[in-house]
Length: 263
Ligand SMILES: [Zn+2]
Image (cartoon, rainbow, N blue to C red; front, side, top):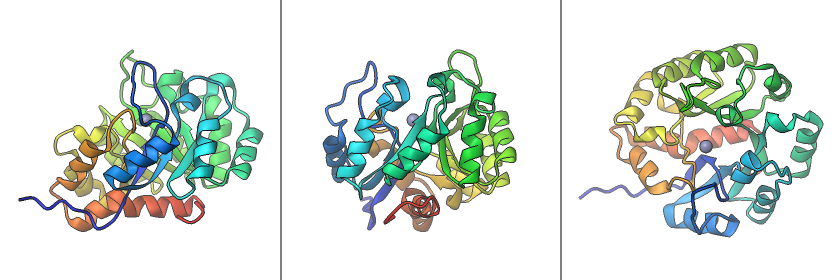
């Protein structure tokens, strides 16, 4: 019989609370998220709500409320949508007012803007100056054939802005080999298992080629569930220590360097 029990709780660094078009799940608000986390052994999520990423209301009420009510369970990414304009003063103000924010979230494919394009420049300058954490969606070639966040563009950004901690959301799916190379080349670059963990053998490959210290756990929850993605790590042919690095310890290190209070 397999014994997959963990003696520690997991941290999910890539999460999108709230509802997304064409998907329904009852546990999508702060209370529901915490309930699902309790059921799955998740201590902390860092979330960029769908409404901040997609609907453009700009109020960010869901995440600011969640961070206030569950300061030890829910932290936030400030989502940057360049189509709505980039206001660095507004970002600074939001971080001051909401200590639960720990980084920025970018979604170039969906906003159809190149990661290394002009529109993101002030964001990366600011993030680099403050040594910030940035989670970006990264993907080789998107469904519409564009490559807004492919490996070449990520390498370009990391060369220009060496002081950011850059989580490669989905580890540039379609270019995972290149993502591993980037993780090896740039100190601040990390591989994210969100969705990509379903590729057979990918966890073992990342650990072997980049080291478990460069791999982080993320889920896209509640759009995608915790159980399968946790199982992809817990069931991987890697050591206990390597699993713990991926599921918890690397995230803690990143959050502490990002100035996360009480992390
Ligand atoms: Zn995502």
